[in-house]
Length: 149
Image (tube, rainbow, N blue to C red):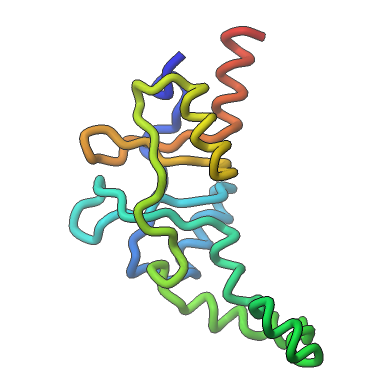
């Protein structure tokens, strides 16, 4: 079985200049955990990926702040107040540039092994330097079950 047999085509994307609010809205409304980030001029050119986790990380202090400033670092109500500020950030500020990709003609278990190496739940599918879709670990599991279950 190939990635092309199970991948989602025509996936939702965002641009690096979009706000985190715009990207988060797309992910929340479509119940997806990540978006490929495409070039401003060429919507088929993958330049990064953003996850719902990426949109939340700016809210949290780094580990050093927890150690050195226990009082303010644990003020979770104050951290929540920063959410509006974080949502104004640009996707480029938190996205993962040049993400790992798979190809549509790759065997699904090879794609799954790449995903396992980096603990990824979703990975973009690129063919001839163009974004053609996205595949999730759920897609792979479903495809394997239908084929062999």
